[in-house]
Length: 336
Ligand SMILES: Nc1ncnc2c1ncn2[C@@H]1O[C@H](COP(=O)(O)OP(=O)(O)OP(=O)(O)O)[C@@H](O)[C@H]1O
Image (tube, rainbow, N blue to C red; front, side, top):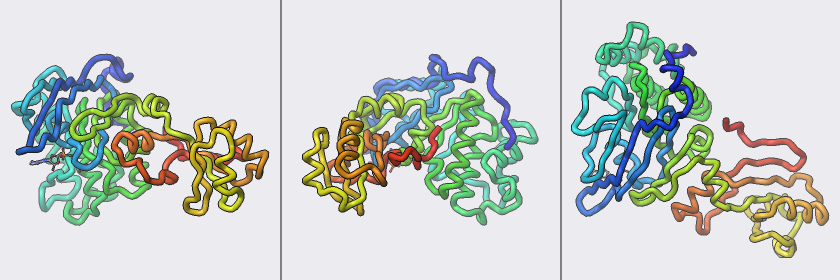
């Protein structure tokens, strides 16, 4: 992968300088308030995630930042300027990938990117660099309409990067990608951050947001329900640690007798214990039945998210969390 041109050295780290400022933004569609008084700041060089359930107002909010929609009230400043009405001075400085990115028809991937690059006055080699950045070099001569959904999504991202903007908006950039392509794209996105670019992105992949974002805003019903680093949100969330024992080793009733076990139930072949004092409970489990095959799952951003969005009630969360077996092996995916 070629390294795209980095921005000025002082922009390499996340700074305190504000790239986007949103103050008391509201947007109503008919009787429905899609964005209900959102205020936030995105700092220069920051990787900022906008999370929330379907219909929470993420796209509306991000499109207001991009200058694609007008807010009913409130103020937005992007790179020191108002993005609305459409601000041409901002266009070369921002890159936008939307969920319905348009392509030039009857062009190859490379021709499409060259056209976009030309529109922005980008250098001649920009299209090739952007193709390589998203792993599409091998598809450069394929007509856009013959690319797979995931390849088209990567082309849309390349289109947002081709003029090397300092601020990049990505709306669910990994939604249609297979797991390997998703991981490959994480590296592309991390590379953009290393170059000093500011990234605002929406996703429904909580593991991804936790792995990539410096800070996330969780929107619920058009309002910010939480805003902080994933680490701080998880630490403050107080979600329990889950211990998974092979089913049959210990009954739920016996498990509930252990001091510190808040909940015990059999799910999917395991006895799942919830606790806020995992060390103490592990010691007790070890004494009772041993620790062979016991796994611990620590709280994740997904736990925090589910709690905030109200979906946690009555759901099983054994699919979430980093998993660590007690014999020291770790099957948690490396997230940073
Ligand atoms: N142009 C529009 N006209 C009317 N209602 C709209 C329009 N755009 C969005 N909405 C409504 O506003 C609300 C917020 O939509 P928005 O697309 O911003 O949510 P989102 O969080 O991005 O959702 P998703 O995760 O499904 O993409 C939804 O109820 C949606 O139906």
